[in-house]
Length: 392
Image (cartoon, helix red, strand yellow):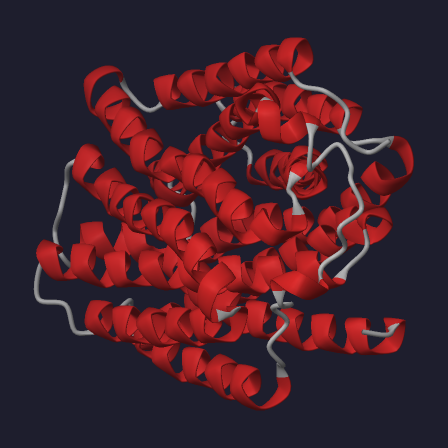
């Protein structure tokens, strides 16, 4: 595939990812307020468990769908994911109780795992290693740019039409993404016999010791989802407890995802030029400190600035971690290994909200900041000691 065609395909894959991210943004921005105020659930642990269900469904989908996409192709997995996401949002919009919220969120989790792996693997197999960091940064820009737009859109719709109405838009947006994918995105899966057979680290050294290289990346990815679980599940409730308005809460959570989205192509590009590992460590350390600073202020402007800085710091490790996995993966197993990374990473969505919810119920909200920061610190130490630079 020539260079112009490659970027044409990537452009439409990113558009589809933006639609999908918009739906996730609607959910992440409003689900905790919806669960508390519409479904009348008061337990922080139960509210957090909604994201745990999302993480459980998404992580196991990541694990299976990567291998499946290696067999049946990428495009079907993307379409399946968008369809399931749409029906999940529809179910939440008409939910009569907590179980409906859990079921709808699980459908969105399965859908998210399916379309994200399909899109990510498609990009990885048509892009060169020298541009992989940039490509993964653009992928995350589309995902979290969409989430930023979705959070803002959902907040605006909720202010004017109530908390149920935004979730009904999810099926419309998912349909737009599916139509775009069906007509404008080609199948990118390359037949095995046409793949590059040049021996490399991936074919020899990596095949002998895969976990030696992947485990530090899995742990760092896991901690990133504990961080995101905190922002997704508990930060809106914490801000509500500080008597901030829904619009102010939306601004802060959107600032995080906007900064995260815009910074990821830059982080990916720098990692292509300067290496991945050092950037990952800088991002983990800055995020560890940033989370602690949140617990020391109740000022809206300061928290808005902290959200922007946190998004930038998160981008510094989030995108390079994906690129590191892509660097290590043999081409004919890229779907399987990216899926396995996303499986372990997204388990943070399962365990993070449960842990943070129990901590909040038992000790108070401030301790959720401390636990989140500690998880990032542990990941920093493990990456520093056990990981290796992959961009050589």
